Length: 404
Ligand code: CTP
Image (cartoon, rainbow, N blue to C red):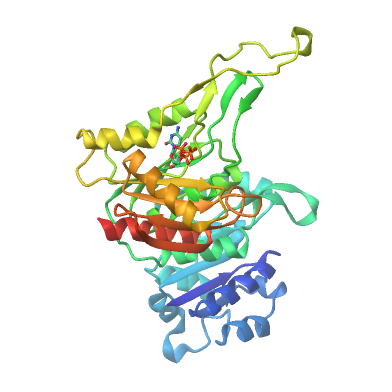
């Protein structure tokens, strides 16, 4: 694929070097279009060596081939990383006073911006209005994330890591094979309150569920994410015009939100880690040591949400042909034992596909990478995937699409 990487003048340009490497290593033709300012941070020889294409900032070079429009016309994707506050303002206004500006105006390909700036500049009403306008025009954004900024500040404004931008870019190059479908994903981990300050929870970060939502949206689906206690940093990746986020806290709240959203969904994916039990009573006041030692908590069982969704589908409360996918995090080191448990679990829950992964200190929860096997209705492993959570998401949605 032909990918234009626009680079504007911010210190995060040094991270874009790695992004260009990832894209070329994945077999894409990359043309880097820096602004004059960007070259103060990383120079032309670096971009030319990495992309193996000539690099210029000017609309007056290569006029014979009408480079200032040809680049945009031939692009399958334009990524701008870093996108500074100034460049975002220029893109919003359609200013075309350099090669990047003309390329962006001439392209009909998807455009992905990776903003990078100081937190104050990101929060500024002007920037936020520009971002809202760009989103309404279908421009895609990745990040910014929360973290350390140049000069020692911290806050929202840090450019997403190259790997995250790379995954977002691949998502935009994805086939639109879920066009018009409704996809509902639960993500994160429920928290069951014990008292106003304590809860029973789990270690799910929500990353796998968010990756599923992002990939489904990139493939054309309308997506609802029922998000249980996911950090803003992880949720930031789900900012997409086709993704609606419904925040929930407890298993009961998640159940209500899922049942509501699943009524019109074609694909339902239960990636959330749902507590099987909750405290029988929730204290209105905090437990204190003066009241005695809290040595045990009585628990009652929560509903199995995905089994309830599968039963509702069987009773005709959801569209015909709805595909339901569950997850199972298994701790057994023995792959065949994990598969066997997955087969039984799929049948017990009445779902179409069950993605099983190994969860221990090195795999699964809170990790960036994942590895799953997907068990189908005949008990066979219909697909497997290992790698980033985005790669795993793609494999799961591929399996869902194949079975539909
Ligand atoms: N799940 C659910 N409702 C619950 C618990 C789990 O919908 N109350 C869903 C999860 O979202 C996941 C799947 O069920 O998709 C796997 O749950 P898991 O906890 O592995 O299954 P259990 O039936 O609790 O089996 P186990 O005895 O292994 O804990």
